[in-house]
Length: 299
Image (cartoon, rainbow, N blue to C red):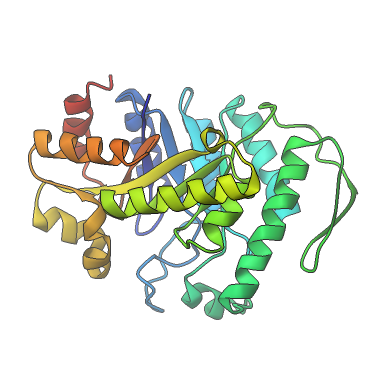
């Protein structure tokens, strides 16, 4: 069964507005709500800095909802030490009554690293940090005691107590890099997420992930596969939501009639998607989300 979720951006909005969006999405029948992890807006512009912090809003999401799975897509290992992150996610799982999930990625938006004086190493180093970080997270979230001796992270008899409510809190990897990201997902992740790509591209990357799973002896069905998609009934709505990133996200936007949108979702499901998330950006078009929910008969 395909899960339909909502992924809510934290830029150019308020906590009160976010709470209203989260609660309405839950009322409409969506099964997943997630936040992103940025310090600046996702445009990459050094003056575009209005963005709420992710761990705090993830906790608020857990407290504002009662039913949905509450996730993050995805935390950046470049400024989130995995041990500190594991403690935060465990607390969020406690706050939600066992509904938390978390994602981790290598980070990409250099503007926020530079602005805050956080090192932004080359892509190979960031991928090495991701591969070490997710192993630390698996140990801390899935095991009673963890030891890890890496170049970037070390754990020595580390305990994460109290334990998460979920016995195996899901860990997602975000990104579409075929050599490293999908290989790391195959080895260590419970879920894989990629945003704004076409069904054909999703199918291709899904096959690459399957290949990595086969190479490491992993059952492909152990990894939930998700895609984030925009939702815009009109061109004006699309540009209002995504601004300067419109052309970059266009391959992964649902548009047209209800029937066309449903057909497009079917293409992603046929391509291997277990989950489809509607990526919302302020100003939030809740009328469009309600129409979409009605078309899918979610509630």
